[in-house]
Image (tube, rainbow over all chains, first blue to last red; front, side):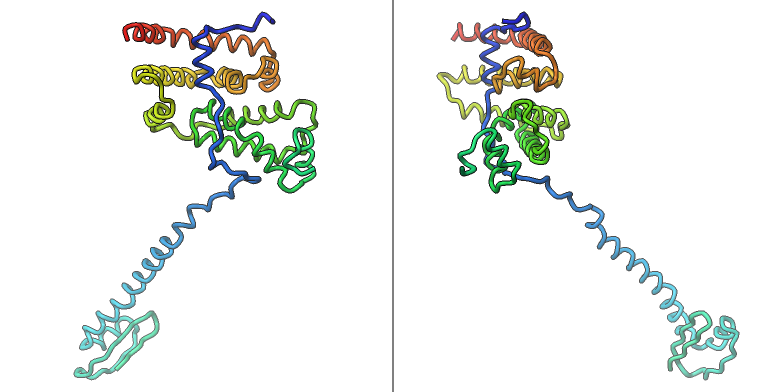
Length: 113
Length: 193
């Protein structure tokens, strides 16, 4: 027997043999030839959330600029001549008793009776 | 010859030829010993399953490179050892107490006191083995789980048989120093009982 072969005390040998005894593989261990496919990127899960937030922001901005302008102009139908003259430099004659919806979008002026 | 009846070299040749079912037979033949080494090395059943799967996937992908210079088992053991070293401990054992309780139920013995003592010793030994450096832990696992000879361990670990011997010697001394006080307590406890 070579010099380096060493024998531990019996009690340690016994304990080690018991603790490190061979084990049976569980039934849940299945034969597999290839590794599992890579998990889906987590970013895709959040994509719909980002889309909803993006569209809500865009819609909110559009609503705020367009709709509020319309509302404020509608409230001031009486001063429509002044407003159109100020914002579009167009002189417009509107009867004071006539109500109208007026939406000012840049150079375009829409008047809906 | 049907795949199921083939052994050793014939089975490996069948795997190389791509015979249907040959890889499956190879897996079934060796899964217990691969799993045993992984389990005794890392001490975690789930992690041991991962290591086993990784080892076989590596084995299947590199089987064509096996030239037969060494024994197939040695080559397989080397793959397991490398997988064990590569695998970082991903999860810590959260329920060691549950495991102890389960092992207590599995191994009924003469007295409850003896069971408790044995479970306690088992826990201490497991903790002492877990605290060993990776190469020392692997040497002791290969020695006691697979009952391998020094030169076989040396071939797997890529070192000399003398190195294996000195590592085992160091491990035995370390474990003895750590566990001996508890064995004496245990003996005194048994005497009183």
